[in-house]
Image (cartoon, rainbow, N blue to C red; front, side, top):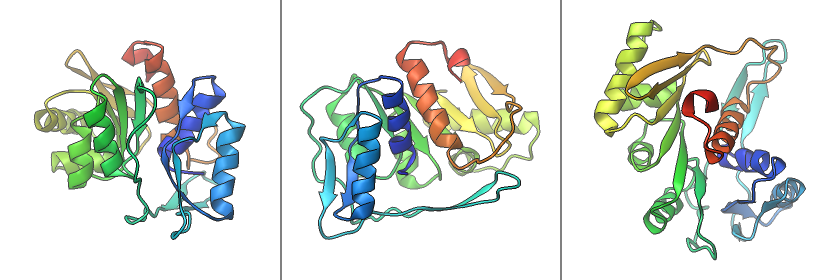
Length: 230
């Protein structure tokens, strides 16, 4: 349930990290299910808002049970956004997933010392702008190619070229690209690296990005080196 930040929040709660979630649900059965799930994983929902005029936004995932491949139908209601941007604590680490840009910019503006991970699915003007303000960016190959204004042909040389164009545009190398083949493209000390896909039996790809972001966040919170964290 939820987008990347919601799923990652449950994972962090499961691993005993004190976690708050801020977002918007409707006054309906789906909203109650969201609250109950967060409660199960000990995620604080004090700043979870209820919109009494709109229903809870739903995403649909179609799973190919033989291959583990998933088709996602994602919907974010632009009218179902946060209205409150103040917290009664100072966040040390935040995960942003692009579902509420006003909330993301408010957090970045009000908490200069907060380390942030931003998950970027597609390279729109808004996602690219937020990505340039965050400590780390975990992004899809689609986002990377849209930001770099080029398509990769799948060769190692094209991946390096793709990453270099991102750095040239963003001014830093804290982008971590989840490639279509599930290899991970990133950089340490100016050197572009690629982590091969782990060989496991895939049952369901649908939460791959969410679990990666949550696990990476946990590692970085514990000051694990980026190579080992990825």
